[in-house]
Image (cartoon, rainbow, N blue to C red; front, side, top):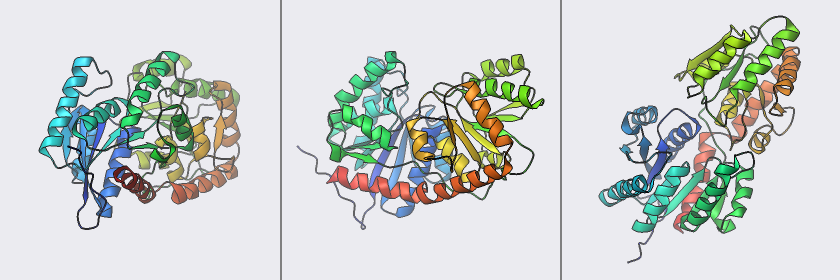
Length: 379
């Protein structure tokens, strides 16, 4: 029997189960928390979240509990899905779909996208899939690009709405067998906060918010800061805010370079306040979707330096808003030196970036875009 999809209506909130692979601290997890909170505020959606790795004990689960958003657990869901793990994860998700009244599934991250779309097919629950960055994009290793493209091609017909976080990602979706009217662009949003940087005033500090793992390149920032020290004759302090498997290697690299003022904070709960204590925000990556770390730096009013990638071009469309550089330590060092020498430019850039955040990256705007995708998915 064909399942008749509900429609968004004011008399009954739509129950949407969001599925994400991991509950760690990261961009996709921040996106899910911000989106679910904003959707809940509209009164039109009742969000639930199913988490794979770390599950109900994860940082994401704790944050969601604080917002009153129910959390479920799919223990078999992880980044590496063996055939047996895939079967168990699909079975676990199907169990929730049978025991809860779920109107719509919304998947985030690649592995969750696989499990959710298969479970949606078997239960005839419509699926929306947010792509936080296609793994087959240029810049990713070929060993990942080919299988990632094959998987997305196979599952695209099972996707009622494919939500892309940038126009560039939506263009990549043209390589998939999915109709254009089933692809939406909804740019990431982050919650506002009162913490503001003073980029024109000392002390001059640099910050990079990122998970210390590929595709992020904090190693390039360390090398660039060593070059900056050689030119200035003194070290510029840097804070790496985030955790990850490369942390020990990066700490060793900082020691070898003699960067005594490189601080590795790990995961912290006060990122906005920490950013406000810096003058320049940096994000260096091999590839990105629409990076939340840059949006957070824009929100704080920092002068921003980021790798010149399609996603960062959409966030920082000109020199007024930030500096885009090649993934090269020398180019990054030159950009940092120019900003360190010009406090007025840092002030203008931080103010323009903050204004762009206000206009384009609020949670309300993101929630409205996703509600539109839900309406099209259920039509």
